[in-house]
Length: 307
Image (cartoon, rainbow, N blue to C red; front, side, top):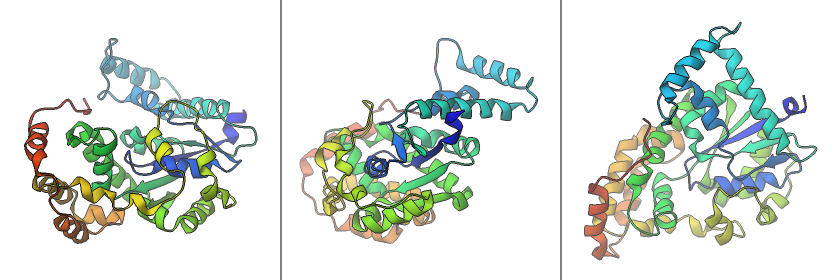
């Protein structure tokens, strides 16, 4: 089966971490096929998760029935996961260009199923892309919330997601390639050479010079970055600071950094004290929005939480 010859690449990151930029760079290789954001594996893997899905058919009961069905297989759950894997590989293959060695699946919400993906695809390639978490929040606020202070809406990603990725990385360091968004921007060629070495791909300068020509099939993904950034630029590295332009936003951000803690930040490659010092140095620019920021944070907001 042709799909079995294709190997998957997964980029794991929080949203707004530069994953679309990295995806487009890798897609310049004739050996890498990809699509905007498949989201394919979420419903497949959640067929074995009793919580996290609301459906008219009673998802919890369906999971119980599927688990009971799996018990009749020679190898139980493992046989079921193997079939899910073959289905995914066939669908990746159908969405790939002839001659592709890899299909790259970049779906930010895969932080919900990162451990299952690592289990199902032992031959896969896994790239963990970290970004300064305060920059992630800033990008979410300015792109998706149009400047309004509503980080709580993205609680699932900013809290559940980041801890899931950190835990998965700690348990699987030996099979994962890790990089920081900031290093990808500052030392693009060197970082891409290292990724190509991990993937056994030939590095070529078009990865940096021509990624803007890549049009990703599908309507999902980071359309903002594709429009705004036609080349790799350092401009995005310090923009996050201006988001924390009043005492309340800095108070929220400092609590978020404290919640993450020095150890977790260190695993991601960031220094707790440096982040706190940088945050403290930001000047007050817009004191008029403090009250509205507080209201948006205190008033309950519907969150994408696991149920």
